[in-house]
Length: 359
Image (cartoon, rainbow, N blue to C red; front, side, top):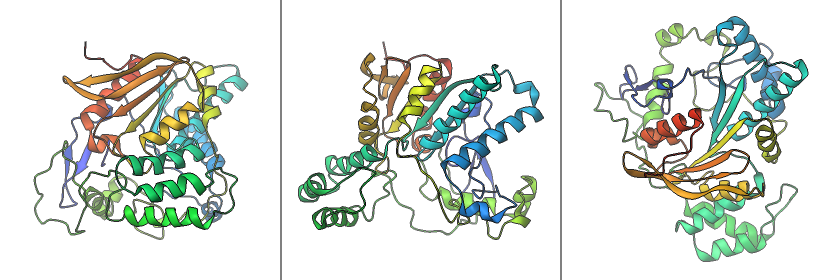
């Protein structure tokens, strides 16, 4: 409701308006809240909330899809694509892995997986972290001294159990430096009030309202909305929240999903990775360093791609059908900040065509 969905919420927290750049303009879209405890999803076994993790999430998502296709068999043979952002850099390839393995075990196509696309995605812990601090420095968010201390003294490997005092000094300085910013879009304005408006203020899809989360929070906590959505609120001990407070423990998290991206490519699954270039949480520098770990040859060299005669970002394609693309002027949630470019991106991904070079 703040990104790629068909509706946005007005500032009164009660009414909706259409998003002309919603992704369901080009595909049937199924939104899945996971793991259990996120959004209106739940488990009847409360201990599940203390035992969530990558593996259980992938299994639950796969079982959900199998059951959903049994319930709606007319979709069984349709081409199927998975998209996600941020930590879904884990969820998407891990679900793809189970689909690929399930098809092989059954020796038939149970789910017709054709492609996966992940944005500003967590994919390789070590380089994701290194790239984040590099982004801060290259975008003038921190000092030369702090960046030097971290680059020289920090151990970014997943096996690191402690850090030196020099590393911690640099890290603490960086944390202070980025206070006061929306680190998910370093150039975006902040929301300074949680108050709703009595009458909806003028809304714009192309100029994202930084208070949009507040409007959605209010909307999804209206009893009539919850009833219309068939939300099982009687089983929940809290209102709808943008981040779950039910999940108390995360039991397993892969340090890298790069092997799963390679597995997808090896099984003729299209792989796209995109990056809003104003995101400081999982920035473009992180993604580029992480993908470089694959050591794949380049099939199509770096070039600017265009939307409506302006540069939408930059892209190149690795051999094996892995496309990397930046989205110019977008933060962590690409469809929020650049809906036109986000829609163009998904259209070309679904068609299997390279992003347009403007020629």
